Image (cartoon, rainbow, N blue to C red; front, top):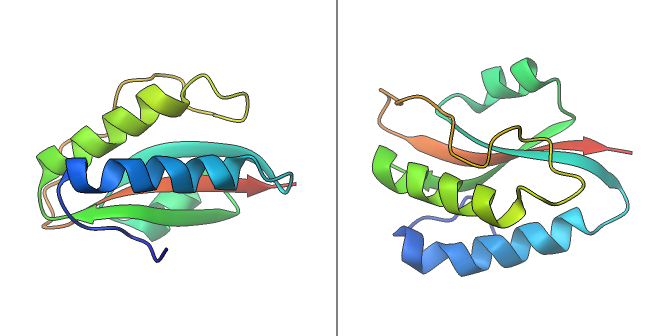
Length: 107
């Protein structure tokens, strides 16, 4: 499945959850973080992660917030999750496109 996915949260959440679950169960991934941003390059620098994977793209900040919040509620308690809050913490994005991403740290 090619990312980032697009569409309403109801259309993409099941696929995103399955994709994330399959990825984070791999031994090569030591940690992950789920977030929201309009600038993925700056986000990777801020996290210091090995990779940023854009999971979801939307021109609707509300849709991006819904997807981020749902994914955090699903994966927050996973032992590899580095998020400190299960609630979406990204600010309001003023740009036209919001991404929900996974920051990945490899072993």
